Length: 266
Image (spheres, rainbow, N blue to C red):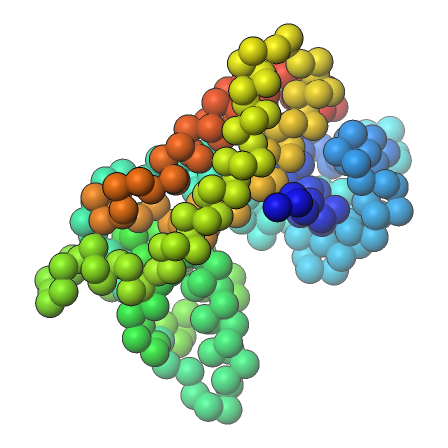
């Protein structure tokens, strides 16, 4: 598998990892330098920033020296804050589930498609048409997402436990594509476990090397906790690769983030 890092995704990853530590907006010149270290050329940075601006995630501003810069919108900050809990957090063990039941009028069926796609992005599994399920710990983030998109009038959320009739592990295997999720974890390991071994046995990376390695690893990893929303370990196959993938990312984070921050320092 060849790892793909789009300029737009790397910019979002940069803001999540380092951009919020800047005092004030991030100058365009800094974005070009820091994304260039990850292999993104200046025209790609500028065009991707323009797309993020059109989506309302980045706002034009001025740096302290008067140069062109961009700052995060309130919506983008909420998305990154929610992402922090998902990407770096460890879900508390629980047998509680969050159930989303929705009904959208036929004349607004475009909202039905949007609702399904956003629930899927949040990591919900499908119980039946119009009935989706996720670990209960996702309730706050789900509420933020539905409210931001103006979808709350069409959805009811419930918290509860699974009472039957199939064993819960069998039900989970129907609600989620566990084989597909396992493959995503294995692909992450194929790409980043060798890099971790090299760090464990080789010399200390320079700040620029640490920055680049961390940004690329995070850009891959940050999608996994959304595809795999923290399903209870007892309900997953015994050889589940998600445990090892999480451990590899955690060690890469510990070894690279702070050193990379010295290169990304404002």
